[in-house]
Length: 162
Image (cartoon, rainbow, N blue to C red; front, side):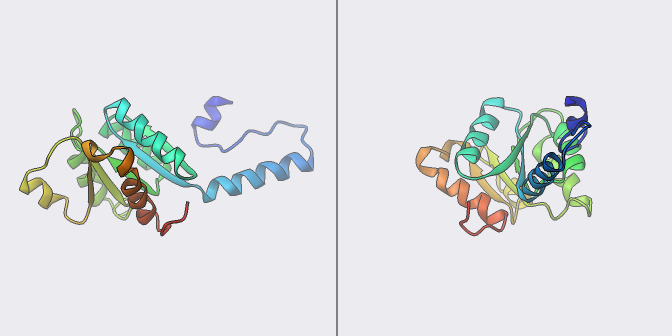
């Protein structure tokens, strides 16, 4: 069953089934289809876990984690997230390469991206990120989570709604 759901199935319903069971699965699938999908791409597991916890505490989102740019790109191809939270400094495929690949593909070019990074950026890097919201990990303290959550809601078009 786990292999089937990992491949993208919402649920597995075994026969014999009752109409009530089928109706409940359809109802849950409808609720799930309305849930915003957020993909965190960050090679630092602790950072990704913290961001996921903040999201879980401040809304109803389906949050996925990827710990490399290459893995993130393959998850994007499979799941088409509603928002990507991207770290820039990663080995192999960094965040800039992920952005280039996203923007060069018409199917992914319109997915909103928020950059959350630990490093300060030079002028060239900031220029390459024009129009993308950048948050620094050092600024994400308990008192600043609201800025992060407001950015998430804004990118998802929720305008302050959870």
